[in-house]
Amino acid sequence: MTEVEPSPVASSWTTAVVREVERFGDTYVKLRLDVANRTPHVPGQHYVVRLRAPDGYTAQRSYSIASDPEDPLVELMVECLPRGEVSSFLHDVVEVGDELEVRGPIGRWFVWGGTTPSLCVAGGSGIVPFVSMLRFARRTGTEPLLRIAASAQTRARLPYIDELEEYGAFIALTRENHVQTNGTERVAAHIYPDEIVPLADGIERAYVCGSVGFVSFVGRILGEAGVRSDTVRVEQFGPTS
Image (tube, rainbow, N blue to C red; front, top):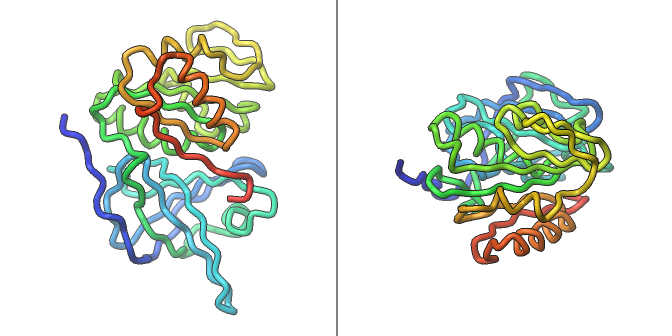
């Protein structure tokens, strides 16, 4: 299989029509968008969503793509942050048929083209770009090249958990016990270094996505598992993003 390369960065804004909206409590909203003049994405890329007020004020935020590149719609899973001016609008206000300004796909570093044995480690909503990789791997038959580990406080705080379990991802919940796909019950805790070791065996690249603190923690345990730092690609986000 030939490595999929990202297209040049989209420089202009376009319109996306909201075709589907699914809300998950007060925490997440899934938007499926019909993007005009769409450029195919590579798993790991993101879109920027821009809101414009009548007085001309604008606000924009970046959101990772969850959909497979061949999905006719672009899927974003947005975490609703306290006082998040964009995420709150997308969660509370947006409805099917609305139009949004978007730009993308963006990103050439944090992408997976389907040929490199890799481990993805996500914290909470950091799982979103890895869901795109997962779906791409399943469609192209490259699942053996992609392992996924995900951490969150509870099941409700980890989007796509059912799909992750079906894929066989390792899941660590920190405030709930969790039954792994092999039937064993894992007591609530952060990821232990010795849990990363078998997942990191044989990989050539690691991707880490999550909060600043999570990324720092995972970087340390990847190092303890023997993963070279120059093979680790990181996306991190703060509480006000």
